[in-house]
Image 1 (cartoon, one colour):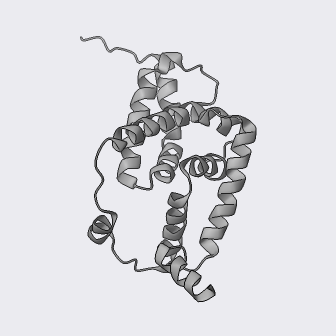
Image 2: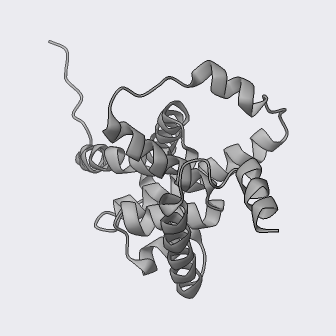
Length: 186
């Protein structure tokens, strides 16, 4: 009879813990990138990198923070790589990929996603880590590799900017709408 190989108990424990953070990683990746397909790729790469580096993970420490840092670093690497590639015309992409929503709920979620994508990347990351993912300011600062005061400032500014963006009427923040307001005021 062939002998069954036993799974390493440490690997099995790591696997279970990693599987538990995947939904949180996906939510974070979706918020960072604004695209579900790219978010899935980011999560997959982060999970692969985490599994490959599992010997460096210390059991009992914060798996979420560790994997979020891996995902964030991979995301930043992808951004640097994509800057060297040419972009498609945004209006052409929008015409190809946008479809009308058939319910009001997704419209509000879409407004939030749109507003999130208008934030500076550092602020978007901060509000996603603290607000959406539930990390403390200390944990978020560690993940983002910045001082805690910087993290608090980024979160506060992101929240204020999100509130401003969500309170404005749809289309009010477009360059054309701003120009029309200037003309009327002037």
